[in-house]
Amino acid sequence: MKKTSIFLVLALLAYVVSCGPSISVNQDYDPGYNFANLKTYDWMKITVPEGASELVIKRFMNAIDKELEAKGMTKVSENPDFLIAVQGLTQTKMNVTDYGYSYGPYRRWGTGGVDISTYEEGTVLLDFVDGNSKEMFWRGMATGTAEPGLSAEKQEQKFAMTASKLLAKFPPAAK
Image (cartoon, rainbow, N blue to C red):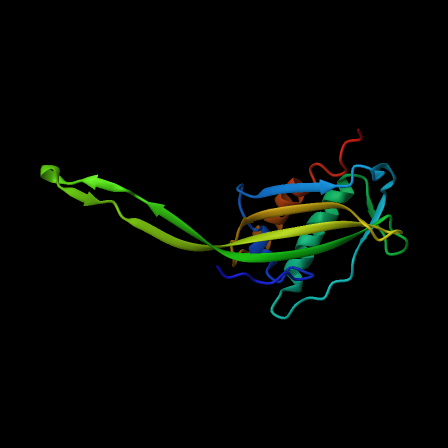
């Protein structure tokens, strides 16, 4: 299995979250953190890796911005309540379908066959870091099958869906 190293920014962002409804998301957070005080945020400085598209990365960040704005948060450049770091990775996965055995005519054994294919699976991590203490208090993870070569419009749609699913439970409900 081939693994691509984790980037500080998503080298292949279009691969990672451009999946259809099969995207899976998870969140983890510090239950002792006071989420009620979060009103402003900013993105941590990123370095775009060679071969990555700045346009694709901006589309993803814009989708996250829109989702946070809908939750009443404002992006600011000075003294934000929290910072957002983004990371990603891709892995080549293998899909094996075994059709088993079958009976042929006159009760002879036949074979059903096996199909083997590979595909790219990507994961995006969003880490939310306290603006003062610089400690992480929330992590969101989205994983899905890659769809390279999408148009800008399709990317925006997929990123909007991913951002919505990823941030659906942010901030966590107070206990």
